Image 1 (cartoon, helix red, strand yellow):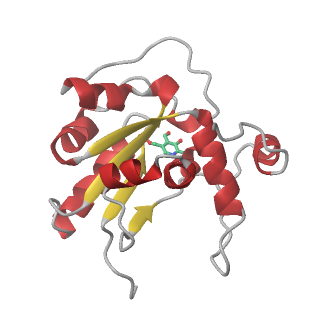
Image 2 (image 1 turned 60 degrees about the vertical axis):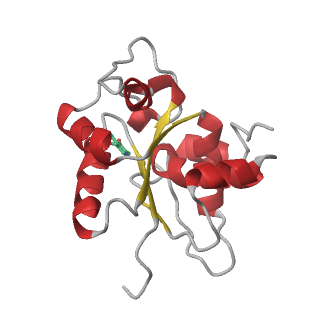
Length: 180
Ligand SMILES: Cc1ncc(COP(=O)(O)O)c(C=O)c1O
């Protein structure tokens, strides 16, 4: 497509099947050791984040009242987990406000960038990037994520405005504001 290959890929995960499939594919076609991969999840359903810390599958149960409903899954997919365990570099557990920030940025793009109407699950990755940008100690976070000025970050939105009412509450009315 005439664009540089990604230095980073941010993949949102419920059970991790999508993230494992995409990362497995990317690890095949790029130098997997150079590709900085990050799996993002809602903090109320962060089974892969916890699995990443422990090095083995950890389930999360109980209520998951997150706005990131598509990713509200508590049991990692065993096949996806195998790929993520071997190849994913970082796991990030996100508050709802991160997804809301991503929805607002995608819907109100920079200059001539295309407008993307993204629902909660699709917007978490860009939300992480924007949250890092607005974080007071952002340089330390950027360093941890390897986000230099030359970074090319691949993001895939997997959801439109599935819940139109909630989409408008977030994007028009500012529901789930970014934390300081
Ligand atoms: C909108 C959306 N995006 C991403 C995912 C993530 O998929 P997975 O459960 O394979 O991690 C889901 C899961 O249902 C989803 O609904």
